[in-house]
Amino acid sequence: MTTINVVGAYGKRYNNIVSATDAWDRGKDFKIVGGPYINKSDWAKYSKEDTVVYQGDSSIWVLEESKPLDYWDKQEKVEEVVKGFKKVQENA
Image (cartoon, rainbow, N blue to C red; front, top):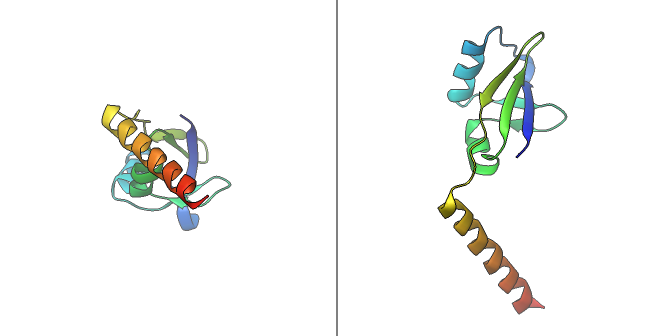
């Protein structure tokens, strides 16, 4: 698990945690510091094991806590890896 540090996208600044978490929950874009844009649906799809932290001018707020994969998510990932490995072996 890692921390994804974000700022407001497209120059947007949030003055308080309520407005930042509201924007996050409504799926607004944020900019990963040193990286691409991200929103809540991107996080849920690709990075739900990571914590998202908003970096304001003088504040840092947690927008989303990491959520460890449960057994079924892990099993699904294992099956995807095994399928991919078998496909590579078939094409070798």
